[in-house]
Amino acid sequence: MIEGRHAFAQALLYPAVDCSMTHPSHERFAEGYLLTRPAMRWFYGHYLRGSADVENWRASPLRAADLSGVAPALVLTAGNDVLCDEGAAYAYRLQQQGVPVQLRHFPDQIHGFLTMGKIVRAAEPALDEVAAALRTAWEAA
Image 1 (cartoon, rainbow, N blue to C red):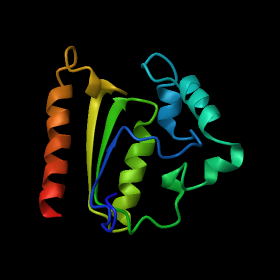
Image 2: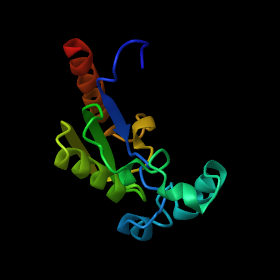
Image 3: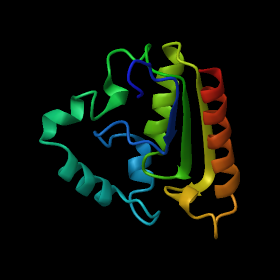
Image 4: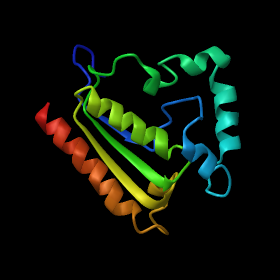
């Protein structure tokens, strides 16, 4: 955030927004889809101080009591990703609390596909969408 200004946009690309790892996609895609459930456990084990941090909205924004004041968001999810369901749930919560949100779901993709432009055809148009959303937000600010 620029000093003296408020945040005006979020681009959340396959976001990790609930450290509980209880969403169904954590089971469906636990193994074999690049980002695995054991890898997420490892990341959280190095990120969280303890189990109480799972409930902290700073680590798990989906668990925040109120999201109504956050910036408009573009939430991008990949269909074959342990984080897919929590990203969609976050977009839904934002929408329910009056935050402008675009959920862009890529059902045939895996976590990290945006960085695989040389081999994944969906990467370039997806990045173009993210850039267009940010450009629109910056121009409106």
